[in-house]
Amino acid sequence: MAGAEAAGASGLWACDHLFWHQPLLEPMTALTVAATASTTASLGTCVLQLPLRNPAVVARQAATLQTLASGRFVLGLGVGSHRGEYEVAGVDYSRRGRLLDEGVAVLRRAWAGTDDDRYRLDPPVGHIPIWFAGSSERAMARAAREGDGWVPLFVPAAEYAGARGKLLELAGRSGRDPASLDTAVVVVLCTGDNVEVARKSGTSWLADLYDLPPKAFERHLIAGSAEDCAGAVSAYHDAGAAHVIVLIAADETLEHLGPLLEALPRPAEPQRTVELGVAP
Image (cartoon, rainbow, N blue to C red; front, side, top):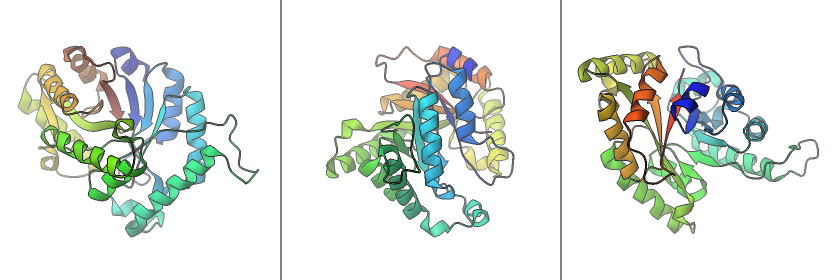
């Protein structure tokens, strides 16, 4: 974590699965450790599946983390897409969108203060940014209506500008200032001198992570030299993504992240960042 920040990553993001086919760290706990091991990097969940959790508990966890991180925490939320997790958790998969909306309302009431004196946050945190995942119509409408940011996965760079434009248009129709939304994207990446070797290695790593065939990720993975990968990341910045969260499809994360960051042009706009997503 400290190594990623020292290498130049502007943020550290942890994913969330409650029931998964391989061991995963609990994201809020992992990010608490990251808060003590970093000083400037933003910290976030990418993304927490709120319908699988008690929102009052999440509100307190997030408030604690925001305090320990001195305001650097962003709560990324989504519903996920794995029905099996919901079945094992005993949560109705068909109600996941409604449960997310209801949970967000609980979060914001808790952070703003509550009529129940038995639930107090000390110190009070006020507002914690919430970024919503997803590129479906419902997900984008939710982000436009009540999100502080939008962080989709598996959106090609060629399609990102159009999707982002739609999001901002929806925000304007909802009576919000489109400029108030942070727009981000998650990309998966594997560097290597030989593009075919890097692609095979990266898709195999993703196949193991998601328990799916490698071919499922061939069109989503950015693979090649650090310079080529840096060009692909820059394409997202040019399409309007202020934050590009990079999930390195390899175990040796810093061996790929360092050369990538070195190959990136110095941003003309300081708000354009490259951040590290950590899955396992």
